[in-house]
Structure formats: C-alpha cells, structure tokens
Length: 282
Image (cartoon, rainbow, N blue to C red; front, top):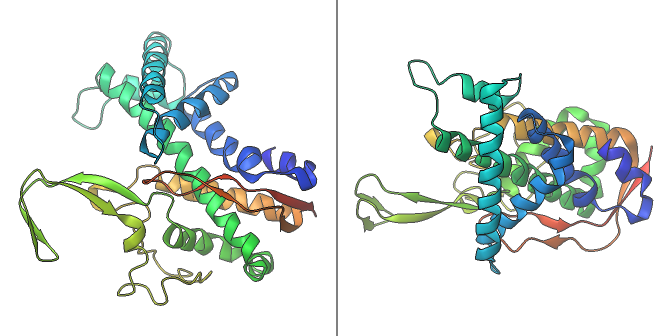
C-alpha cells in the first residue's frame, strides 16, 4: 500500500513521508493492537520524544509526549486486562516469563513505549539511509535488481555502513580499563556503535559499501548492539527492511533522486527527515 502511494506520486514522491515512516509505524501499532486512527498520533509522540536527543532539543515537548503516551498505554493496559485480545499487549498482560511474575503496570507501560519508539524510528532510519545510498549509486541498485538474494546482505551492510543507532549510553557495573583509561564503577559512557562499525581492524575497506560483504556469512557488525543489550526488535527490523526493499524493487523500474536528502539532527540516531525521490513504475 505504501509503495503504491510512493509510485503514484511520481516526481513528487518523498521516501520518508510515503514509505519509510508510515510502514514501520503501522507494523508496530498493529502488533500492539492499536487502531489505525492512532497511527499518526503514534508517530508524532515518537518524533517529539526522539527530538530530546537532537542538537536542537525541545524538553517541554518531549515531556508532554511522554506524559500523553504513558496515559494512553495505561488505559490500553487496563482495557486489555479486562478484555484481552490476540495482540502483544494482551500477551504481556496475561503472563510473565518462565518462573516470573507478570509485569507491573509501570513495567508494562515502559515496555510498550519502548516498543513503539524503537519499533519505528530505527527502521525508518534504516530504510532512509539505504535508499540514499541506492540513489547515489545506481550500480548498486542495478545489482539488487539483477540478484534479489543480495537484498538481505545489503540490509546488513547498511546497518554497518550507516548505522541507524549511532550511539547509546551505558553505565559500568564494575571498574574497567578501556584504551588505557581507568574508569570507576558507575561511570557513564557514550558507546559509539557507528564508529565500531567502521573499524578497519574488523572490516576491510570499512568506508566502502560492499553490497555482498555479509553474503553467506553471519553479520558481525554491532548495528543492533550485542550481548544482553542486543536489540529485541532486530529480527523485525531486518524483515521490514527486506520486505520494503523487495516491494519497492518489484513495483519500479528505476529510482531517481529529485533533490538532496535532509538528515536528522540527532546525536544518537542517524537517518533522514526527507528524501525526495521518483519511483518510476515497473
């Protein structure tokens, strides 16, 4: 549906507005059992909260969005507790993990908010970053059209090359020495995932896009974090990106840039707010 909208707009198409933004919002909202009428509000809340991590923050707007979304999910949880359905919120309300008590109201609300924000911001950025590369490199677009088995490794290369989540904050649970610097327990670190993904000690020619870098190999980038901090939604984000790219390639014969992409101003996330594009019909 969203790819068709993008194609129909012709030279007036805009990737983020028409596909990269509404598609993952719809997916995560439907998983949570949220009616379509709320999709636009979901996106607005998400954008307001993420703006707190930009170089031009709006703390009041973020606080208002957090307050509104917390109230919304508290009401949803009350409703699903009384009348559970087959959605993810109902599943969380009914049971905890093996041997664990069900989540508290605060835990449920926080979990739903996390799923909403992480479930759409990251995939939106991944799709935007991937299309910017394809618009700049028609040779890569041609490779994907000629061999669709390259779509999955291309998604992994985009997660490495232009990581949607560039950095996150972590706290030390015990003293540690990193690169010769002694750090005390409780120290707060800003871990640069995007920098790690361009480490020449790990990746050959890290500043080049190699579309088949991870073909037939287990991806070893940290675009989704690692260990106990591995992104819960990594399989969903990968699936959404592959499905969206396949659908876009199916519906088009060419992708043409219609102007420069506009980047987000976040210091944690990397993506685009606007990618003017003409998706030429197949």
